[in-house]
Image 1 (cartoon, rainbow, N blue to C red):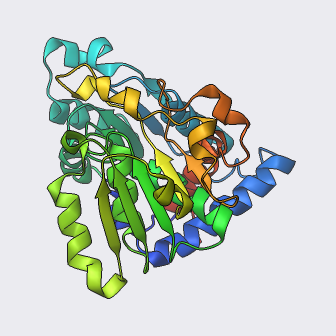
Image 2: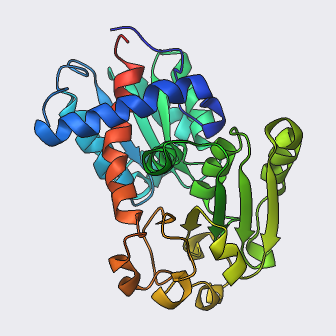
Length: 319
């Protein structure tokens, strides 16, 4: 099988409009055909060896990658909680672990790690062995495949990625899913962002610098808000809500009490809007909101399977 030009998947800035024009329709086709016969694509990763190396807990990312591999014809090896149940517990460096694992015949290593930049470090080692690293989340850094499934969900709903009003709220400082999504949505003309968060949890400077750099050519705009107003809601196409990342904070995460979505709050959203969340939620979306047809976060999570199938298929399949 032929490798695609994207050898490693490390950050969402790698994904250009040309790549998305291939991967989004591919994910849509896989989703449609999967509903008819979930084994339709089981030849695509035949004889490809995949390792899921997760140093942090995961449900959706780990299981969707695992199932994506299986539906494409590969049986992945899995190391969950590798920080406690691998040689990392003895003090082995990530670089040494990757060096050894690359010698065991893997084609992909799908890596989740608590340290920002871990995927780049792993890729430097893996490149010497012709092994591809896929970043499945690195601390407060990025989560590029989450951004892909988020973009796919938005594209599936609106049929476009330009000229959309995107409101993102919650913990925008630590939320790697937010970082990756903003970098990706910032590629499309006419995107209007509203960033809703307490001052101490607002966006990092590097992301603002990226938006500023491309503001004029892509007609980007954004505002910073400390609360979710009726006016903002009425002008929102996508409401992307996130949890407070207590595990990456020194405080107790008390901010959450001011950032809970309820049916009373979201009634001001337009009918055609959607509510998204990378999950897990821990109180910031009241369960009664689930019954609202604009609540798309469970559909969004399910799309992770199809998008990751499309990505793996793209990386190791002729197209």
